[in-house]
Structures are given as structure tokens and as C-alpha cells.
Length: 134
Image 1: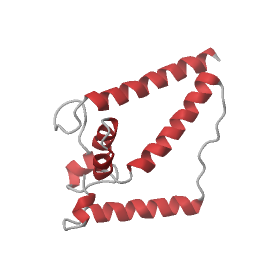
Image 2: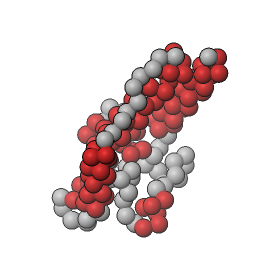
Image 3: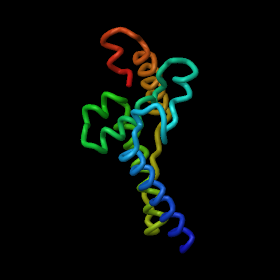
Image 4: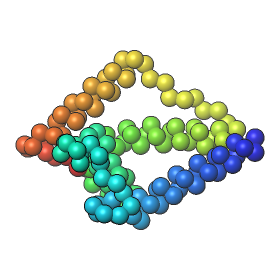
């Protein structure tokens, strides 16, 4: 029980540190705390996660439109990560079980197809597709 609480405290502190780093850091700069996307660096193409850190930074500063402009998949990504982090913290800190997310094969295939189409569309350098680039 004590070990779970310590793990929960460490996890909570890590989440707080990451959020603080994104809030006060500068993910818009090419130098500093944040690493560039390796996929984009190697290929020149945007991956499905490109713009997510900048989007979270904008969201933390209250710019919802800017956050969605950085990565339109951000609400789904943050929803899943947020729920799972809450579930793990609830178990570690309060010994409370929350159901884990379970996705059917159909949902996983559909999500994969949406992500694939998103990656293809955001890399087309013509209007309106270039609006999907971060």
C-alpha cells in the first residue's frame, strides 16, 4: 500500500513537472528543452504527433483554437492519456479501481485509418490541406 502511494506521488510529480515544463518552456523554439520530431527531421514530413507539444502549450495558455490548429487530434490524444493517468493515479494514491479503456478491433482499425488519412492530408502542400500542418 505504501509502495503504491509512493509510486503514485512520483507519477503525479512527474506529470506536474511535464505540464510545468510545457507551460513555462518554449516548444516553439528550435533550441532548448524540447526535442524536435525525429520523423519530421529525417523525412521532412509531419507525423500524427507533430504539433502536439505546441498544441498543449497553447491549450495551457487558453488558446483552444491555436491548440487545435497545431494538431487536430489533440483532444482525442489528451482524452485518452488524461483518463489513463487519472485511472493509474486513483489506483496508486487512493486504492480505487477505475475501468481501463478497452477498444474493439473495429475502433482500433478505424482510428488507425483516421490517423493514416490525417498524416497523408497534412502533408499535402496545397490549400486547404496545409491548414492541417502544425
